Structures are given as structure tokens and as C-alpha cells.
Amino acid sequence: MGKEVSLFEHELAQSFDREVRCVSSGTAALHLALQAIGVSEGDEVLVQSLTYLSSFQAITATGGTAIPCDVCSKTLTINPVDLEAKITAKTKAIMPVHYGGGVGELDTVYEIANRYGLRVIEDAAHAFGSTHKNQLVGSFGDVACFSFDGIKNITSGEGGCIVTADRAVIDAVSDSRLLGVKNDSQNRAVNKRTWRPKVDSQGWRYHMSDIMAAIGRAQFSKIGEFVKKRKSHLRRYQSNLINNLDGARMVHLNDEVVPHIMPFILAKHVDRASFIECMEKSGVQCGIHYYPNHYLDYFDNNSVLTVTDALSDKIFSLPMHVDLTESDIDYVCDALICNLKKFDI
Ligand SMILES: Cc1ncc(COP(=O)(O)O)c(C=O)c1O
Image (tube, rainbow, N blue to C red; front, side, top):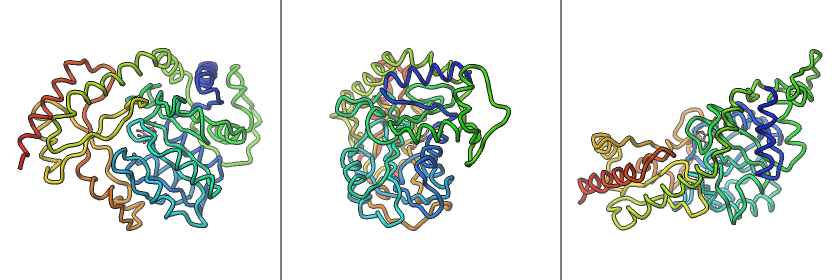
């Protein structure tokens, strides 16, 4: 970690108008942010079950417990009614996940957090570049964590960052990403390091390397083009499919979203595995975002989550990345429409 990381952080900070700390992954960003706000054994963090494994593992890495919550059916973001019902004396934080890049009911999440005195760690891994009420995600709110892994809206190969206006969180993560060595981050920026470390807290080897930061900076310089392309891909999918979704529906992503994935939900009678097989035969690879975390042995707490349970084997994602062309999207949409017809009842 050296000058490139410091420059990348500076460039990101200018766009968020907040301080930024870069780390080795989005998972590391979540873990360090949770540790920085004091989540530890006995604490509960409310998070939607329908998210990448990282959100859950970051919580359990602190010793805390992930409490799976349901999602809103339209946006697949955390359901405020369900989350409020799950608040207990042990609840320390809420982790809304910006599914697909959209923030869903984020204002209500913050209203609830304020009412109960809870911290909010936004899992904004999908949402780099998205805005909410014309404000960049990460530039408002409590703490936001982004991922720069290989398929995200910008990539540094692997990487992530923490954005917040909370000085204490910035100071804590500056040290905890460097094995807990106090005040060594700023030395690294000028090609120095301490040989007599002061350590009084648990740290991790989660810093970002200069190589990753150099890739991240090159990517960030193209963010305008990436935002334009992803948004225009979303619009093309929407206009191609809006009247042709026989048996499927799109997850709602509004005009402010820079989509990271292109999620769909199949009708009840359609078997997902067979449908995805048909798409693959048509030359279109599909993803599944996600297998709910409350089905996993490590987290199982026997939750019943009405919307998540109903959608869990109906969700799938179509291709979404900047190198798609308009004719690629038209091809994918034709394959989708044609394959849906095979499942007509
Ligand atoms: C919702 C969500 N949270 C967290 C992460 C973790 O990011 P990373 O892969 O950089 O560790 C991801 C990455 O895919 C994600 O999709």
C-alpha cells in the first residue's frame, strides 16, 4: 500500500465529498466497518437474507449474529416492516443491501435506525455510481461499503472501500486494515512504514495494494462512460421486455440506478433449473442472485421469510456488463421471450 492507494482514496473522496478508505475487498470493507462501530459477540445485525454470502460472513466475522430479514417484493431490498419487527435489545445495526444497485426503502431504514438508536452499514457493493434523490450513494447516510471486484460497476481486480463522515470509523478502519498498527496508513502514502508498531486492537491484513489501486484509478476515470452504458442497457432490457414478459417480471430498478445485475423473477409454474437450461441452449448464461442465507447451515435460525421464500427458486439474472452491445441485449431478450413461451400453460 502506497501512493496509488492514497491517490485513489483522494479521487474517490472528492466525488463523495467524504473520506474514503480502500481495502482488499468489499467483504473486508463490511467486516472492518462493523468492527469499527463496535459490533461484537452478542450483538445482532439485521440484514436481508437475499444477499451475497459476504454480507452474512462479514457480520459473523465480528462475533455478531446476522438476523435474516425479508425483502420488498418489487425491489428485493430490505423490508422495513419486517426489520422493525426483528429489533431486540441486542440489535446494534442494520445492513441494507442495495440489491442490483437500487436503494429501495432506504429513507425508511434510516428513520427506523434513528428512532431506535441503531447504526446503518450500507452494503453498497452493487451500487457504485447509483444516486438516491440525486445524491450519490455513499455521499449521505452513516457508513457505505463498496466492492471493486472483477465484475462490479468499477473494478480494481479485487478491492473495496468504506465511505463515511464519521471520523472515528475512518480512524479505526485506517488501522484495522493494516493489522491494527496505529497511524501507519499515512506513512505508507509516502513510502515509509513504522518498525516499532503500536497495536492495541484486533487488526487484519486487508489493505489495498498499489497495483489494485492503479487499476481502480484507471477504471474510475471511465466511470461516466460505464454509468451511461449500464443505464442504457437497463433501458433497452426494459423497453424490449415490458410487454413481453409472459410468466416473468423484472425487479424494479429506477432511473437513478446504475445496474450491477439484471434480475428477473419467473412465474410460479416455471421451473427455474429447466428455464436456465433452455437459456443456456440458446447461448445465454444466467446467474442466480442469490441463494438465501437463511437456508445455509452456518446461519440457519429457522426464519420464515414470506417474500424471500416464495421467490428463492424463481430469481435469475440475465447478462449485464459494459461490453454488451445493443444487439447482444436484443438477442438475449429474444431468447428470453422465446423460452418463456415454452413454459406457457
Ligand atoms: C451484495 C454484496 N455484498 C458484498 C460483496 C462483497 O464484495 P467482494 O467480492 O469485493 O468481497 C458482494 C460481492 O459480490 C456483494 O454482491
